[in-house]
Length: 313
Image (cartoon, rainbow, N blue to C red; front, side):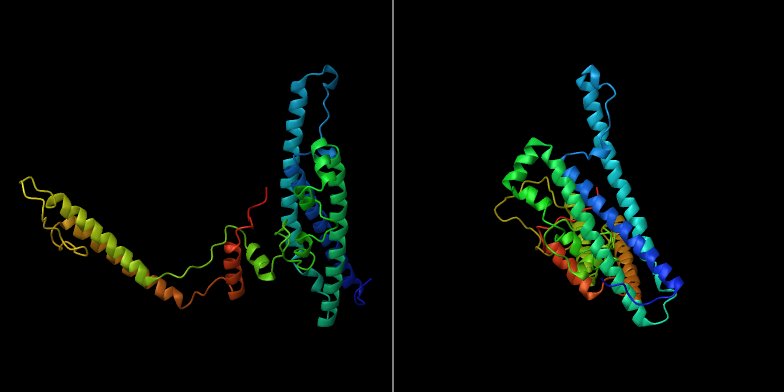
């Protein structure tokens, strides 16, 4: 086992604190995995099952209320685990354990030790949770039958060990603890970094000046056409319909017909010019908020129709 480089008392204490934080984080992630699987299987862990004080009465309503309360308690426990994970992730990313390390070689050695320790603890925690899930599934007749038959749904949830991508995304990326991959498809470093920005993150978009100007011009044209059709497009005098005198397809009514319409179109054009000038001035100082690798990862994730990305339950 790798015990890391030789450290002084303060550096050793910092390393142990960081190791404890990572172990707690691994335990919390395994709890999230366990409770998420329980929610998918519609089962409640034994520790969260409420006792029925009216069990001797045999009232079915009392049993139903107890089951509903147990399910709500399980869902609350899952939310608390996610909250705890965010706190531990913040503590793990402080890098306080580097303060008393006086060389880069020691930093690299301690980092390798923490990585190995975290990876080992993750595998151990997830293996225990998989064993508990199998035991709970056997209590249900339907799930027990699916487990014995090797149904794909059950096999997907209970894959042997922690070789699932959930461990490959966590054991080697201490800074990517907010993303839990429950699929068999591994995610790249760029994809994990992108997903860690959160679902509320907005990538910078490139504005096409020509397309925007063309859209505004067509809007102004439609406004003028509606005004022209309302005033001159309809005539009450009987005329033959064989060869109607219609304007050309790209024809636009002239200006100075209606001062209100002119005011609207001029205002729109003025706002467009002001907006484009603002964008041009900001473009020189504001760069893309996504690196090329993450921009490519965004395209890959958006094109993957088999991958479902959603916030935690």
